Amino acid sequence: MPRIEEFDRELVLQNAMNVFWEKGYNGTSMQDLVMATGLNRSSIYNSFGSKLKLYQDTLVHYQKETGGMFQKALVKAKNPLEAIRLIFEGFLPEIISDQKSKGCFSMNCKAEMGNQDQDIRQWLLNSQNQTLELFQNLIKDGQEQGIINKNQDYENHAYQVFNSFQGFRMTGILVKDRKILKAIIDQTINTLT
Image (cartoon, rainbow, N blue to C red):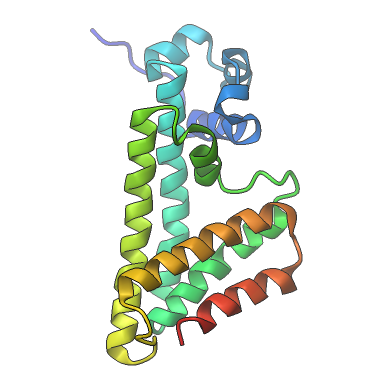
């Protein structure tokens, strides 16, 4: 009979994610994970299978967290263009308060592991495609409503916005000036109007 987990899985994932986020996958040892999660090595292996599988689970955990930020923007927005702005602005507090300059966990993964493991690469591609599809739908709706220009088709606009979003997150690792970060958001929105 399988052993029942006797720990808070979400808390373990959060704590493991924080270590991976700070040190990267390759810089994180099993001892780091033992110390961060409070689980012994055998519990980690029994519950998650491997360090790599635990890392993959932390990526899914992070995606759920950031997905909530996207959802808040979509619910609050009055139109597709405002939704795009609110998505960017939703990440401002996190960027500005990130005193350790950790950046975006998913983008850090892309830089470190995107070409190291096929499963992680596929997860990154799926995640990227979900975000692109969200931007495509918003832009298409905005073009149909006449509030987003048709200088490019909605797919090309979406890649541009996605690229700006990633650049915005990367810039925020070193730049904490709200005025500069808001200017990046404004410029991205201006390209759509």
